[in-house]
Amino acid sequence: MHSPQPTAAPLDYDVVIAGCGPTGAMLAAELRLHDVRVLVLEKETEPKSFVRIVGLHVRSLELMAMRGLLERVLQHGRRRPAAGFFAAIDKPAPKGLDSAHAYMVGIPQPVIERLLEEHALDLGAHVRRGHEVTGLDQDDEGVTVELADGERVRARYLVGCDGGRSTVRKLLGVGFPGEPSRNGTLMGEMEAGVPQEEIAATVAGMREKPQPFWLRPFGQGIYSVVVPAAEAGDSEEPPTLDDFRRQLRAVAGTDFGVHSPRWLSRFGDATRLAERYRVGRVLLAGDAAHIHPPIGGQGLNVGVQDAVNLGWKLAAQLRGWAPDPLLDTYQAERRPVAADVLDNTRAQTELLSAEPGPRAVRRLLTELMDFDEVNRHLIEKITAIGVRYDFGEGPDLVGRRLRDIDVKQGRLYDLLRRGRGLLLDRTERLTPGGWSDRVDHLADPTAALDVPCVLLRPDGHVAWIGDDQRDLDGHLSRWFGSPA
Image (tube, rainbow, N blue to C red):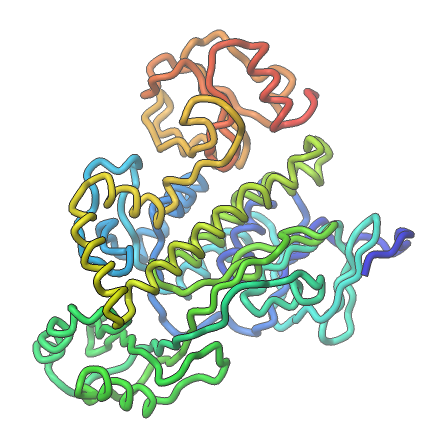
């Protein structure tokens, strides 16, 4: 797979991305902010048509705000409190979450995928549908990507954002250890033949049974239906309406007269993490790098966050100013986050078991979540605002993302739309100097901060806190390379 001699074939693009789901589209947009030539290859000829509702958590909403997308998201989504995520334990949202966007947005999956793809296209990315990656060969100069129709495309880097059954990951030979599915779940949208009040009463009567089960009205007689499957499932075979009816009768004692399905799917609780996120010039992101049960609604969010972490680093590598270790910090930072997500979904899955032991633990945790510190810790974990990357010793805020605060030009996140670093300077004495082509500068003594200055990376994480120019220059070099 790795040839010692560079190929003579010309480069068609800087980066090819396999997969135009939320992760691939977001990554394409992040790269285009830095004028990287991007081609996204999607094997499906048309976007998804079924209307599955997904949830955007706090950290993802912050990233949408940073890139000027939040208003568009809110036009198509529905806000709900940042609560009740952990193992579906019904507790209120903690007060005073450290975010200006401390809520969740439910949005149809086709809509968020369309918004992110349009964002990438608006920035100049190329998207080709109906083109499946079937082979790759990398050398010292780039990657040759082979498509199902025999076409070959050359790029300096390839990123696999092609889902849990990633072709790119398999072609790389990267291990994907973890646990196979033990339990399957059916999910779909359909109409019901009984009154909504009767459905609500039946569902309410089953809330004490910790298992994935609900019928939630969408309006116009349509319900989102989730029910345990009869067998464990990583199966690609879609379920039938009869499968839903049979399982509804087994679990709830009635099939609610369901009919006229809009879409039907099944998923398992397989939990796997790629052994590596990078092999030479090929990288993995999103579900290609990690899969886990959907409980807590973290999957799409983790993928989008992968994309924002990777985008500016890969662009820096391509533009020639990246410090040597920068691209490898993508795996160093994001793989532990994914490992933590896998663990918290494992824990949540156990808490949904009908066995006496897990049910006892669930009752105990339900009591503990009455303590604000416990509830807050779990919500910050699910929503990813508790993530702290290891940047070495320093104040607690270093390595964490900074919330959207008031500054003299409006809102902090509005200053990050170009995907550049930002020096927010309350002393009015510091400067990004020779890094000003990569790092913006706002001198603002009125900024709502309790530290003198912060250096933010393009993903909004705090790289440095202080008030000394020489110390700042050292950290500018660490994250943004040599001065121009």
